[in-house]
Length: 227
Image 1 (cartoon, rainbow, N blue to C red):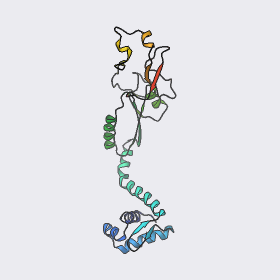
Image 2: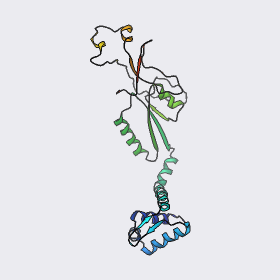
Image 3: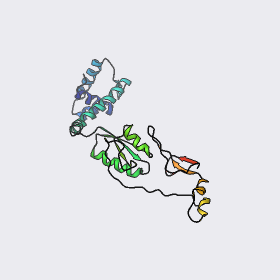
């Protein structure tokens, strides 16, 4: 009923909105195309096209069938390469977590472009986490690879760690902030008068950590470094 040739004929008529145009592209006669479509409608007991003297258009049932046939034909085209990828042990889906401190839109775009070119049949998902949220996604989420996990030792012996580099904290304040007018080292008592601005740890199952906060100091939570 829905062999490959019939699906190709059906989708071509749907795209061309014409039996004669589809016939030219498929190197068939219009009569052969019309007969195949009519046979398909008879077998399905469903009208797939609305016919007028000049055009043909899909019915709702035809639109539904067209979507599925298009997907199926596309899959048939790419299927051999997909099978080769599976044979070679390439994962079908990879979830990547990137530490918020390292997340850069252009860098992620370049990475995704490279991965899509190298592994065209793998679905990639990117997300960013803060502090222990990176580890949380590795240990308790569906993350396969994390870029920028905090610490130098793995929290699970099933996870391998490769050194990437270090990040040093630098305290900053607005140019007009009162603290910028003080001279000499800043004491904790002085710092405690003003709120610390931090990004909240995104961990759900693991203990959240705070980048820096003095006892009794107020805190402002913002969503990202830019803020």
